[in-house]
Amino acid sequence: MWPKDVGIKAMELYFPAQYVDQEELEKFDGVSAGKYTIGLGQSRMGFCTDREDINSLCLTVVSRLMERYRVKPEDIGRLEVGTETILDKSKSVKSVLMQLFEPSGSTDIEGVDSTNACYGGTAALFNAVSWVESSAWDGRLAIVVAADNAVYAKGSARPTGGAGAIAMLVGPNAPLVLDQGLRSSCMRHAYDFYKPDLRSEYPIVDGKLSIQCYLSALDTCYTRYTDKAKRKNNATISLKSFDAMLFHSPYCKLVQKSFARLALVDFLNLPKAEASKKFPELAAFANVKLEETYFDRDVEKAFLAASKGDFEEKTKPSLLIANQVGNMYTPSVYSGLVSLLISKPIDALAGSKVGVFSYGSGLASSMYSISISRDVSRDSELVKIMTNLERVKRELEAREQLSPAEYTRILDVREKNCHAAPYEPKESVENMFPGTYYLNKVDELNRRTYKRVLS
Ligand code: ACO
Image 1 (cartoon, rainbow, N blue to C red):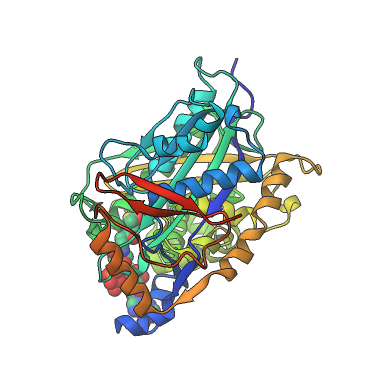
Image 2 (image 1 turned 135 degrees about the vertical axis):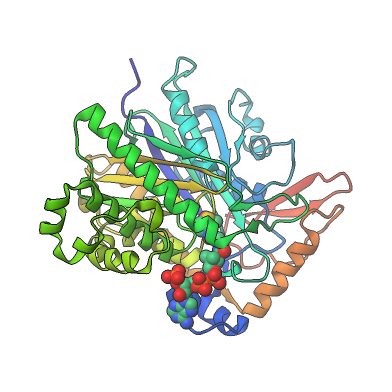
């Protein structure tokens, strides 16, 4: 017998306390006005100074989750981290997080790190859910952390950076349930985005190929998800089946195009005569082949227009944090879930079906769905999550805006020192959010120690 309704029981989000404005960055970079803000759909980009690294991001978000939801170390039997920000080829970030558990004697905690570009958080979440549903489960809860510092070398990819961390408490009787038996994946070998230089934080990225890989993985996952739903429940899946659709968001414009792509797949899934009758304005596309349309402007334009209303209803609400912080890599799709949860009153969300597409270059991708509980009673876990996340909008506004010149200087500092040892970070900790962990120093043996801003 499986434990009932396994899924996400609590969520916490952290992003750095400073950002650069994308309109200012357009001017600073000398690109045409609107390229980052309209062309990519980004407004602000969060970034870390040399005071934050992957360990500090995760320490901050996990301690905040435990404090805000009153989770005790002994309640946790599994802790998983998904990240592509690698500081050490052997020692996991998870082992660093054990500093939060050891003082109370809790060391019986399974799990280590999962890495594959922006997909690691989903791999970690699936592992945690599987553990709760397995014979190894001992009744305790799991914590899943997805965190990254997403930075690119100077050039066209730089405005698609970001940074942040999400922690999720996983267990039975959850208000955000991962639907059983309805999960599809597409995993392939591609060099679209990868990080072979272990001394650098920057990836090698083939922008155009990465978009093509993302869209083709989306097509495949959606088609497989709909096939599985047909086989399992004899259900015909289309965008109508979802109240909300979440995507990994490298930049918001790609998400809008991805939504339009699913509308295209739905259209091609209809019998041809029905499709042309129902959507005469799209009839010219009845015979297109998905794999020939990744960069077809006519197809893109037609389906962006046809799906605009549904996009605004089902996906736009999930893009607030992606638009304001940028691509956080592994947490990106989960920041979509947080954005959705803070976008509407609880009654509008209760009972919703949410589709999720997670993508990591290289490549690994999955589609699954979440059912949101109908329990809106005052002390329900859904109410607790939504109440806790209420502060996110205020925190987004409470961040400090730094100039593009200052942003560039800080990235240069990081670039120069990201694997330096010994190293003492120099940037200020003055404006960090209360309760943030920060890097104190790296000693001559590369051992890192952290301090915490008072809560
Ligand atoms: N006003 C409005 N729109 C504009 C303007 C302007 N002044 N100037 C350009 N644009 C539009 C372009 O037409 C283009 O739109 P389109 O995508 O509909 O064609 C868009 O802005 C971007 O402009 P490009 O010239 O295509 O941008 P560029 O090639 O310089 O870089 C890219 C874009 C490839 C996404 C780059 O930022 C990148 O490599 N990012 C990292 C890789 C990435 O995020 N890949 C996605 C999946 S993999 C992952 O998650 C990491």
